Image (tube, rainbow, N blue to C red):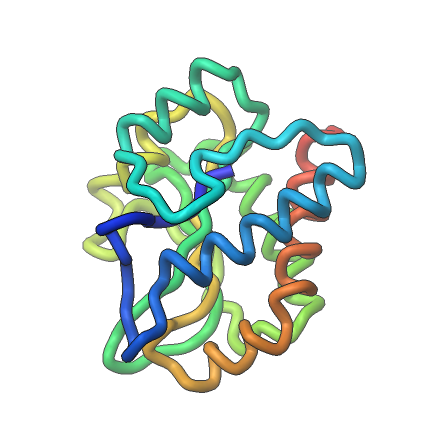
Length: 176
């Protein structure tokens, strides 16, 4: 499991709220849920440290992970809701993983479902590094906008449910 940002790379910021902290907290809860089901979880970080994108991919590829899930928070002047990004090649396994996770997230209080997206925020001609350079089904989850008070409140109130939903989506994918 990939935890977005870390160390000096704080990610999106709102006042004293840092993406790196939100993502680590949720990822640890996802890990806990998966371990309860006897699923081996590979975390690229379990504390506040910087891990390069290259190293994240290397860890997942060398350990032959079954799936690669990268957890993040979005940021923009306006916007709210959860979205999941996949490789622009629209690989069937990536889309299946993303849909499985989103299906369970929709059963929680995520606010708006912004859907499954391909490529990057700039368009479908490129990909996020971690989605382009991993050898297994992968997706990148944006768990709401850190710039949205509504999304922050939803995350704070429902992080246990979000983590369980992500774990359930992963479990569904790896059982097939």
